[in-house]
Image (cartoon, rainbow, N blue to C red; front, side, top):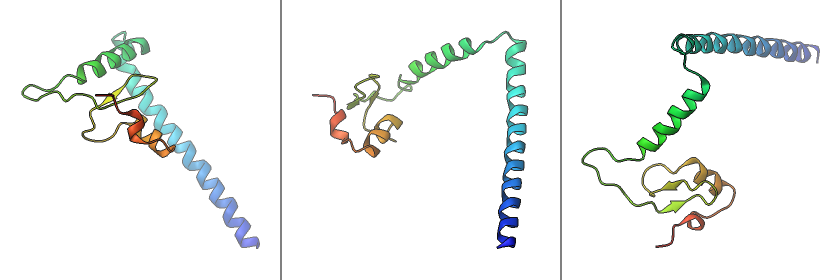
Length: 108
């Protein structure tokens, strides 16, 4: 029993050390990301706006490819999915919650 408790205590210490190391690594990466942003006067608001604009432009098809009409729609956010490719997270989460994909079909 003593050895078991000693091992459990050691595992807890090692896990705390790992958590500390991961936090230190994250802090370094965050500083590396923030430095050029700060240098160029880019704010969090700027990034959010750019992301929003980027997601809108991504919905346009690439040259030479046809747009496919959406087949499914999220009732709250209005996000759509054509039914092709990987299912969006909101639909996967709904299905895991017991909903049917047919619940989100857009009426023809």
